[in-house]
Length: 313
Image 1 (cartoon, rainbow, N blue to C red):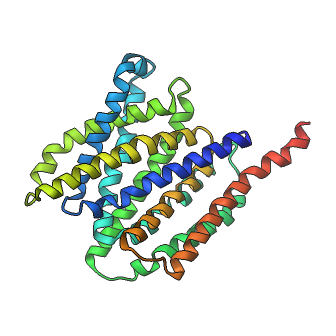
Image 2: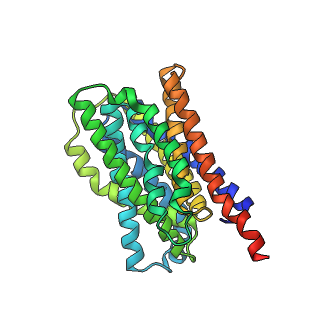
Image 3: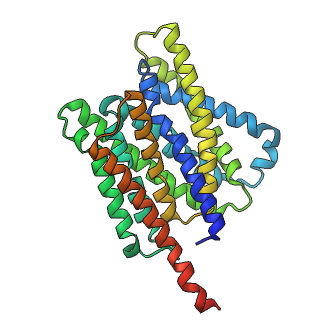
């Protein structure tokens, strides 16, 4: 693993990204008058404009190292990690609720960790099994009640959440590997370029969003929609993604997967504050299990460094 100080900086960046990303679960509730596609277009148009404004003064130097392969990677990463992911997540929240969506997204660390365990030099999977087991148990505690609720709308929400899980797993693995290849492009600049690409995709979706729009909400609803779009774009997409990319260059992919759990934890916390209630027993137990899962994964990544020291000496 990387130097211990750098590793803890990466972990703190992962926690910060989770705290900011957790807000995206609230956005569909805050702007419930608008469809998931409208929410996605609003958020990523704002993200694209902010990213373009930040990148514009250095644009030629920024894109100089990029070829066709890198631009194609930016296109599919923007689609998987932003555009498609958020359409599916917002649909899942509006149809199935925050708790159920958090349950499914809570499996992201398991999916990413399982894929990352095949990388060369990764911590052996058998040493990650306790962490994976704790994460799975925590995710099950988070949403077992939501899954027990019957209904077609709930099932559609679950399917959208599973789709969001697959979409963001693809992004997390692909983005981490591309960052490892691109030594000449900083994590911050890669995030800005991803934002510009996502903004271009959102612009292409504007006609479809207008075509599928229903009755026009009132002025207050539009003002709330604008505030939510700008807030989520700046805090979650710009700052949160920058923290995540900084972390991705510091930590191995197996530990990167565990950091996604903080998004689930903060999403639940914001949900409890929004609903003005305390967590139930199962939800409190889930918090404890998730935290223990992250700590056990950190411990699994620290042991090889300690054990290898005598051999190097």
